[in-house]
Image (cartoon, rainbow, N blue to C red; front, side):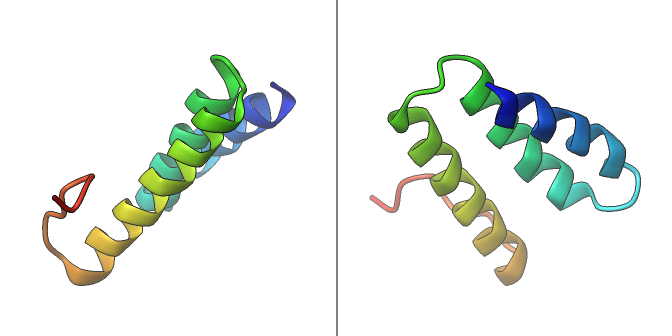
Length: 66
């Protein structure tokens, strides 16, 4: 839960300068604050990975490939 709170605070601090990082930190904050179990943490990592991939390729990428 501490990780979630720290990620939420960090997300708020970088929201004006680095929008992508703010989204990534918000995903981490949400997954670790509301029921910090391994499933939520893995899901957050997957979301961040797919979002970064979409940003790198500059196109929309589905959450799950199939």
